[in-house]
Amino acid sequence: MRADPPLLEARDISVAFGSFRAVDGASLTIGKGEIIGLIGPNGAGKSTFFNCLAGDRQPASGSIRLRGHDVTRASPEDHARLGLARSWQVPAVFDDMSVRDNVVVGAFLRHKRASDAAAVADRVIAFTGLAPIAQSRSGSLGTPARKRLEIARALATEPEILLLDEALAGLTPTEVRAAIELVRRIHAQGITLVIVEHVMEVILSLADRAVVFNQGRVIAEGKPRDVVQDPGVIEAYLGRSLSRKARA
Ligand SMILES: Nc1ncnc2c1ncn2[C@@H]1O[C@H](COP(=O)(O)OP(=O)(O)O)[C@@H](O)[C@H]1O
Ligand SMILES: [Mg+2]
Image (cartoon, rainbow, N blue to C red; front, side):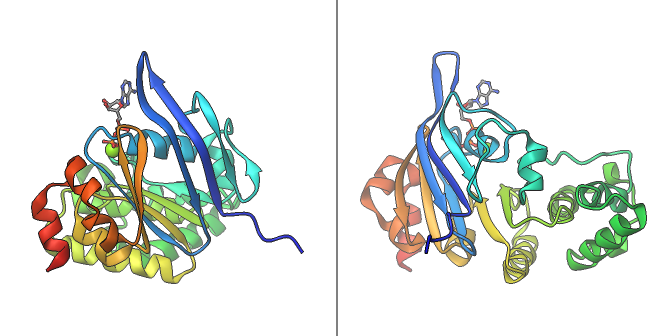
């Protein structure tokens, strides 16, 4: 009997911008049901690596398999059909459309009939707490609602794995708590998550496994609490205040 392939497997991914290697031989294997926290300083290559995983950028070298399929050079749509959805660090919603219509766009990936897509969208809108503003113009929303809308649109594609790129950045502590709660409910639906996040408390409270990026490479990986106390990680870039917080 063969074991199931990992949900997502990225091997030796490299991306160069001119002579600068933004991602430099990074590998990551993601099992079904995990919540992985991807951390690292600004410019470490996290978003560029995410873009490769989602098909939004082709790596110069390396390979990516999604549910056993080679998707290294596949389009974002192919990734989405295979069950991968992502949010952007800078929300990429259609400003002139209503919140509901933005979510319907996501649902059209799997449903050709407008009524079916609308039914999925309404379910996702209720799930993400967007019902009170479903008819608002998306361009009129503030940051927390835009970030939530991005997540809703991704969920409307009915993904098996969801990549969130700083979906909680710029939120107040109260909004962060609400967003953490939403991530937990998404996970409880059986969706695997990879989250890029700067706020360490978020990683510590949500992630099963932390993967630390620095200068385009994975420099540490393990239980979040162990990783943030790893002297190499602290010395490299996280700062001593963080190690104190992790011990507290
Ligand atoms: N399209 C691009 N063209 C040139 N340089 C880029 C581009 N995208 C990202 N970079 C550079 O690559 C590095 C990694 O960026 P990024 O992946 O956004 O890091 P992170 O998400 O970890 O902050 C940074 O130095 C950034 O300036
Ligand atoms: Mg980024």
